[in-house]
Image (cartoon, rainbow, N blue to C red; front, side, top):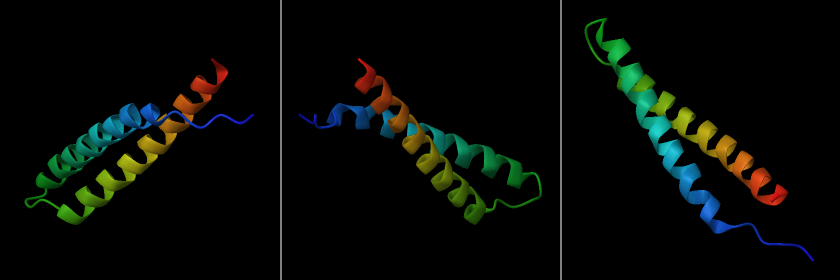
Length: 69
């Protein structure tokens, strides 16, 4: 019998992904402001990349921990 994945795993994964995306955007934006003007394109791309990588990684770890219990 195969178990369905727990949908509650998505909540902490998405919230940490949003936090990582916001942190990546702020750090990139602040480092670009030292040159005179902000670089919105870089900040947005770093935020999206951080969101995706943290969400997928954390969801993978949470699923593996849930299955081991």
